[in-house]
Image (cartoon, rainbow, N blue to C red):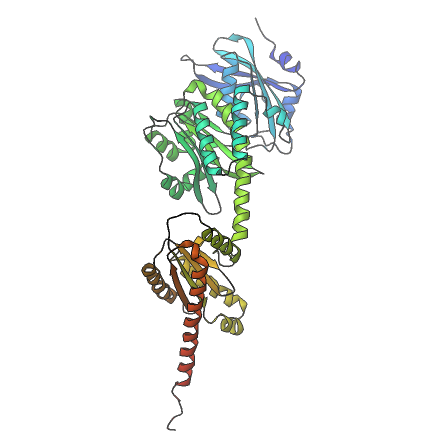
Length: 479
């Protein structure tokens, strides 16, 4: 029986084409071609919407699908399952290469023509995401993902909740490993937000490796996904595509024993935040895994975006914008937390109170720009010795370092180290006072004592300056 493919395509009102899939002798997928399409589909190629970019604007019947768009393993998988395995399929996705959402339906056609199998590909373009389309998935997946979202929304420990969610996702995918990796393109760094591995997983990732040195690898993933909404490599054929696009990463995957991988970007408010991926799952579960991770990343992206935004707002409200150390408000909050601790065991606390000598003189003689640079240099000295989270700019030229768990002798050595480190900058000179209490809850008393000792040190500094000027030799003596 001969099928009039043009007639089939024309009988469907939405954008539709007929796809041929070559079934190879071993049952795998060969060439995929666009046989023909209705007027709406051909117009989408020859006269595409503004947000859609095609590789060519000329439709030629029976051309390889890659004539019109970048190779997409997800599209190939859907075409194969519809045409060869005769499954009715639906997908709703936002490929990176297009600034639109695609509502896609794949329907099998019969009969086959030897090793050529056929399906229809119908698509509807949405310029904004449709919650109705996104929620059109199996009830068990929707229920599990909804439960995860609710857990995150009400969590006091967000990172702990994410780790639990990642474990749930890994178990749903029946994968050996699952991870959420945040990527900061400004700082060129990565952070593992949550990960989970099966009990029998032989290779456990090293967080330090991922966070410190992994950014150059993660940066390549956008090109590896190549404009699709995700990357799913479920067999050797797919891994060869990964090897062609990203040989270094693919080699590292193979060295680590990874034979299947699903990689999904995390985005919120059009901002790229990182990736979620699962590895070493059964190839037969790839379709279900795509469904799970598509919805999971859509939901988690919003929650993670809110979490990152709140963290940024907290940093902005707690950091001194000029020097990068903590501000006075954050110091007050920290002191309040320490002074109200309920622990029965006593933990010491040391306070180092510093005041920058000569700031007014620099401002008066060289301008506030030079004074600002002097403050930055002073902060750099302190940050070279202490965690920035323990350094507070308490006032114009005053910096306070609060060190729980630090004893007197160590604190005195730190004071000496500050004086040595300030020699890196010719204009940086600190007046310093320190004090140690045996109980963190007495931190306010330590602050008062350190402040008083700092003023004594500053008084000695200016007295020595005055004495130096008084005893300066007279260049005209004896003339």
